[in-house]
Length: 183
Image 1 (cartoon, one colour):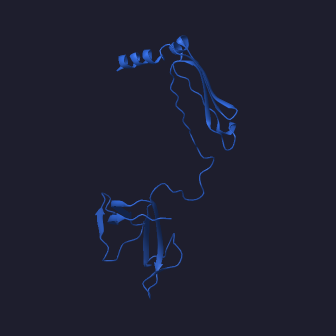
Image 2 (cartoon, helix red, strand yellow):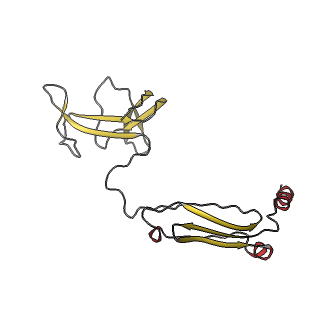
């Protein structure tokens, strides 16, 4: 393979390259490099980094100016780190939400705002919603019960297992199809 690449470099002229490369975004030079027989032996690759703040907002397109002969490859990458974490949920595919509410003993319906705590002995409902931009097949949703809760609905397909410490945990699972939600 190395011989094949070497033969290609000779045929393409990049083994004896003599070229100058300048990459710019608007008036900012983001990379300048010269490639010739002597620089290819000592520095066959050139790296450059430009802080985002140095570019206009929004930045213009990347423009290249190449003079000379030979072949060079250019790779451009963007490393983005937000200045601060988002203070709202961000969407990355599946959107899963859960709400824990008190059940009204008269109607049997979940009522009131979402809970983060409940008095002991309360009858609660945990609602899990899964939203997808795409149709999905054979989706398995496994919902561990929140700490301190015990499922009492006999219609749930709850499974119970014991750990080595003797503590038990329960979760119910659903296997099926998720239809896309268009927005």
